[in-house]
Length: 309
Image (cartoon, rainbow, N blue to C red; front, side, top):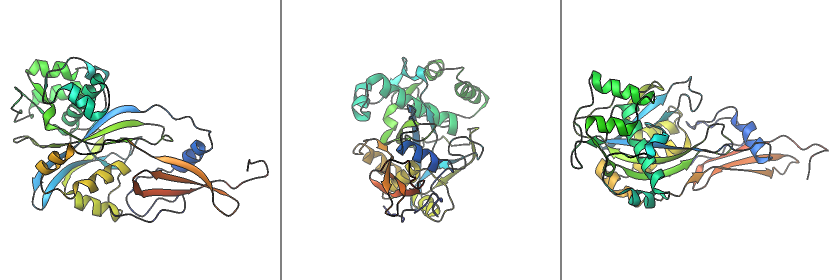
């Protein structure tokens, strides 16, 4: 994985890493014990792939600049778990017990995370990983009736289980591959415990910008997206660019899906520590274990007579 030199201040790096202006003070507050982390909310996101010349392309959306969390950043379709995702749902593919082992959580949580991944992909991209039976997938999700159901899901007026039951469909969990797990840093005001999945675009279906949170969607090869990030042209959060880089070696969507079964799902959580800067002051070092390219050095306030040594 290519790396960039760590920044020596709170100035955003030249690459496209999302770095909100409030981060430095929140990082300092956490390192100094003045900030209590909020509990992360479970979430799921899907790297939807389709084969193209030169390798698979991934579907990405750009979050509206007005969004409170990661505004302007490129991301994948995804969102938080709905409590109803733990309820009874028509299911096909690996058993919930197997998913629980793979994700490292209890069965109801595993089901909810997988359910959220499929539901959010439909809500935000109009793509549905479900079919009339365990061996088929719906071929078309366009039309006014589909849009009415999608809007009801987004508004939480309709549970995903009821949606599937009404249409006599089963969730195709076998079409997903678990890829990674990232937890939002403890200094963030909005925190998510997010599982990343890969999936191939079902034949006959097509993506669209169905999300009110996005102002643009693209299909782009991971290598091209990573290069644009490195040039500072595309803004992304660390988990997004990290997973994009990991997709580059695969020749097609099937190869990425096949590789997902061997992926390490140990959670990646940013760490912030306070250290002396060697000049009578202090600085905060922000790092993501295993992902050195995101390391940042943030200036801290200088010591005063009342500071502890």
